[in-house]
Image 1 (tube, rainbow, N blue to C red):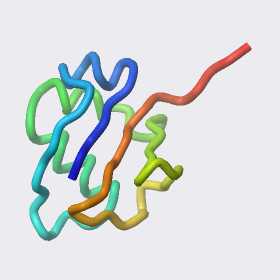
Image 2 (cartoon, rainbow, N blue to C red):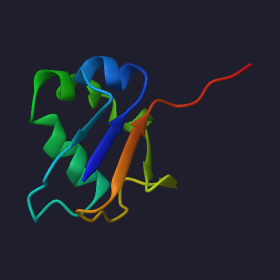
Image 3 (tube, rainbow, N blue to C red):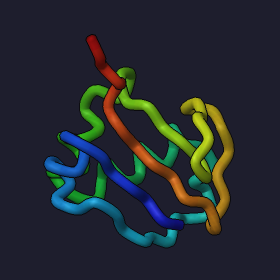
Image 4 (spheres, rainbow, N blue to C red):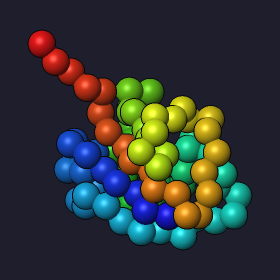
Length: 83
């Protein structure tokens, strides 16, 4: 699975993207966030405010309850602001 991080999520994790192999029990975005949060202090900080983070699976917006598979690309980014 390819994970992409944008903006302050990238700053906290220290990487723009990474390729990971999730445990079989990780089947939703919410579970993925929990799993990633345990991999480093930077990941823990990145996901500290899970409720504001936006997510896409294979370049389509998704929710925390959506299912994921090992071949997916998952992107995490902060809310879009504008003016």
